[in-house]
Image (tube, rainbow, N blue to C red; front, top):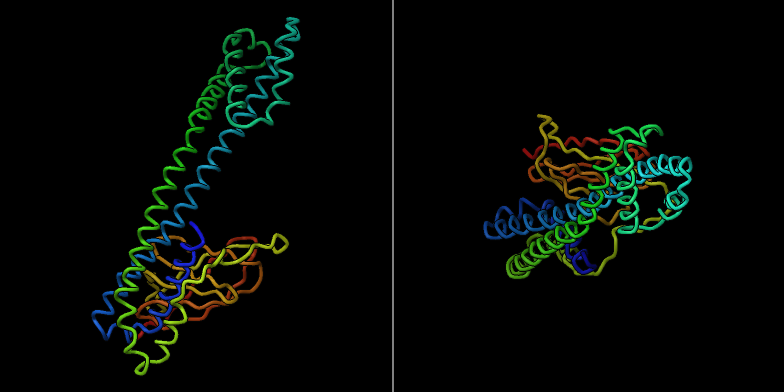
Length: 305
């Protein structure tokens, strides 16, 4: 996601908050209601693709690192068995190879995989003799499986790039569709509100700008951060609310809530204030405390009668 796309998504979420606030005015004009419904769907979809892309790429990286760390640990263990065997048999070449295993594991990618495979081959060749040094058949089977998994996981990077490309393309498609609806539909119907509902007209124009923004907040490594999860419920029935918009005080980002997805927000540790908005519900202020343990904040929203 580039800065322009980030700006368009940020603008889109600002506009969704305005549309929610003035939903009764929008519903009174069927054509505008249809445009706003379609626009909202594209912005929510774009936000979903952005989040999925982030999770997928991070997930691939974490999966690959975890697999490799486990295999390196097993490799060093088996290399120790091979070193003991080499020492007893006065195999100076094998001794030297095993001495170098640990020091050369600072190497990444294919070089490390080559070391793992070499240790696997030597351990397999001398499996019977290594029984006396503590290497069991189960250890060797597990290690072999791990090495093969690392070999396969090296191709995950390509898969992650392909998935990222799909998510990026879909993200851009949704943003383009939302911009088309905004410029060719919604904007053309807004002038009628300049005098009839000036507050709506003013807030729409304020939200509808394409300022190029960076990240919604700059991370200061000195400030400890925590996360919390938001849940929106009908105050009367306690049923989950399907969709809503969240605004956290002192945070320029606007968050989209969907009952089918976890709405997890990261903020500095301490007290927070925010506002939740949803169609057919009164805007509701909420407070909470962000700690280093993830909190769940339930917001009970009053239905519009």
